[in-house]
Image 1 (cartoon, helix red, strand yellow):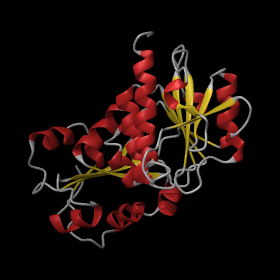
Image 2 (cartoon, one colour):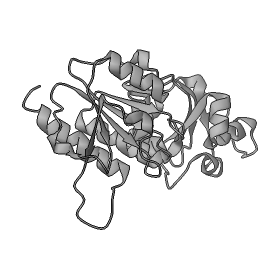
Image 3 (cartoon, rainbow, N blue to C red):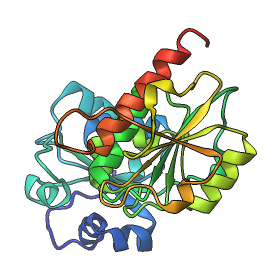
Length: 266
């Protein structure tokens, strides 16, 4: 274990604290993970921890203490509560924050079963929505998630937190819209796009032989690129004055409808 760090002005602490900023995450090719559950899931997924900042005063729960045993000794830095406060975010007080190397998540790395269910998140701008959808996709048994033309980086701290660590799954990839569409067509997957103006209801689409479900941002929806002849639009029935739902809610409805249909087949 390294020497304890007692100053907020320590160079290592200052560099780690910069990882709250997207530009610094890109520059350093690292990101922060706060929370015992999220860190544990990152380790389970093979994420490489560069530095583990542990506050002994706060790290009192059995789960937290057990987690410290999974770090390489040379990566561990004990810090005071004051220093830890500079690194943690939100109301997390579990006593561990890590700086981890950003993994590459490409389409070529995805491994799909026969008749897969794939989610495509196009141009989503809110990290909380991305994280919530990843969490729902995990619960609904979605086989892969493609982040197409994302406007927030995949390992934004709010995405990590909202996903409760499911963001670390190896079945998530980033790509451009053109790359995503090319790959979906290569897989010969039917593509269904959530659009409020579509004529077909989401329950009328057959997901049993595999499908790719595309969802756009709440501000702009899906671009014209996703309105091609081989892409089927579907809508949810809206009975109030609102013309659409939060994208994470829409995703959950579509994913679980697909799961309901597929439960009798696979």
